[in-house]
Image (cartoon, rainbow, N blue to C red):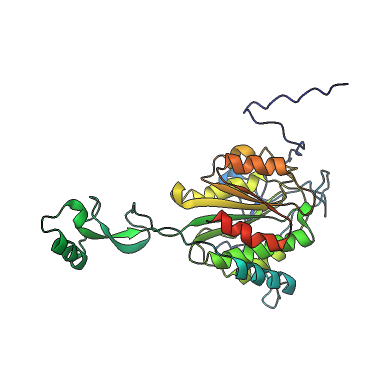
Length: 319
């Protein structure tokens, strides 16, 4: 008996491998960043926390009356997982993330002050550099006049880390180590960190200075359980990155892409300036969805079988 082919969805995308559970309530965004103070927030019309239907300790579809919870603060005397810290140091030692190029199309009011050729956008002349040009070109053109402008040479990166039930055990340790190592490597850039399951938690807002160790510690205190709603963190990342020009912004998703709750995440990937996907393949995973997300997000897909493969992939992501 021949199997009837699935018809494409109205947006032209193939049907998802799994039929995601439709959540009874909008997902909740918790703010456990330094500025958020650990209090749940409800941006964009989301309802505040209420009864949720998520299965404890499992990524498989199901129902329960248990509410999604998150520790509001990390105890001062808490020690991060030593194994994760060891892995984070190993990943960081192997990372070689290239620095961003200095933006030659400067934007007034943002970035570092630098001397650039005059393009009609500044009247702050760098006299020393301009005189050097006049020695070589006695009859100057506009480009021989050197002015001082603020030039942006920073990236804006949103890191999205899956802590749902399907990522428990070794997988969440790998994701946590990758987050800590990458946050340290991108310390000179603007970084947002978002953990997600059926809900999501902002660990650090874009540009907020949080130590990699604190990010690790906070992430590891989120209980790994529940369904996987990949669409929600993509929406949160879009809001974080909306404050910077698209050419400076990108998102990085660390997940097995086993999306089983909420709407189809692919349309939300297409709204991001760029989305790269680190797909954890050490257990159950959805390579088709990961590939679609990277393609629609104008990024690349990297398969990660363990923490040793994280550093080379991250180096390629930012090459």
